[in-house]
Image (tube, rainbow, N blue to C red):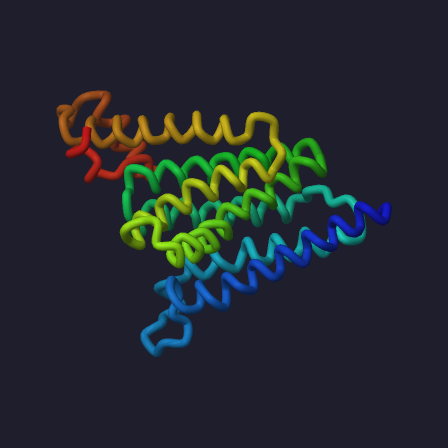
Length: 235
């Protein structure tokens, strides 16, 4: 690897490790996962544990390999991405997030984009697409940094609004980091599509006849996590 390429990879490695270290020690261990509390139960929080551990392993694995040269995706990388995406899907479906009208399609969109890039990276053996798959994981780091910054500045009225805005902006930044052509624009289009689909499913379940085709389709999509029934009242 040329010196400039090595220096770039090393600097990115330091940035990634320092950022993740800060997030884990100052945010994750204190808020979402009270690991040090007696009430903490790994069996009940299994999905969340894997959701946090898998991307950390992916990032470490990739950047350690990148220091020594070009990294291409293998089957294990694809498996890790799919496993992490499944935990994201499960948490998106089961956990209660503030401002569901925005948060749910945001998570659905970033998950979909990451799975697509991982499949492309594996099938094409492209270092570019594999790097993009890893960089999308920044969407799970940036929100914590933004929440901390916006909280200190006191720009938004409450934590829910701060978390929602931070997550949406972080996902766009992460897609931009991938250097995929028109990546942020693709994210925005997919976000609108997911938000529209969520709204349609919620309306169909609340208004359609139980024996209609629309109702059956909506039920299938709802079981897949593509709706929040509380959204029907906003339609």
